[in-house]
Length: 76
Image (tube, rainbow, N blue to C red; front, side, top):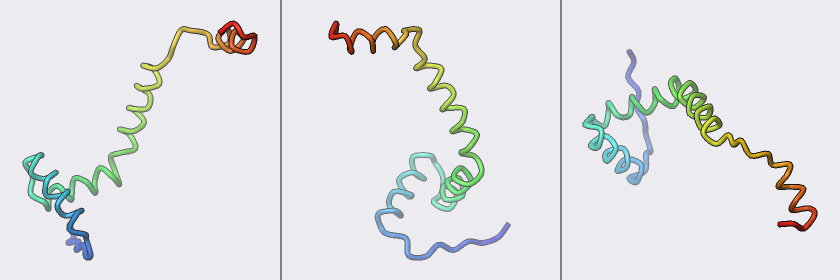
């Protein structure tokens, strides 16, 4: 493990990090490590899984061709 120092962090970002750490029951340092890990190593797999689930949930059995034709022909 190495040490990492982050400089020039705004008060607003620090306050948000402190709130998030408190909500998750972590120290600010532990929360910072979790955020870095998720952003750099863990988010891609999670994102792909969530995107796939969303596509499946939003999939519809309705055929949009009929709706488009009806709108074009003024029936809607």
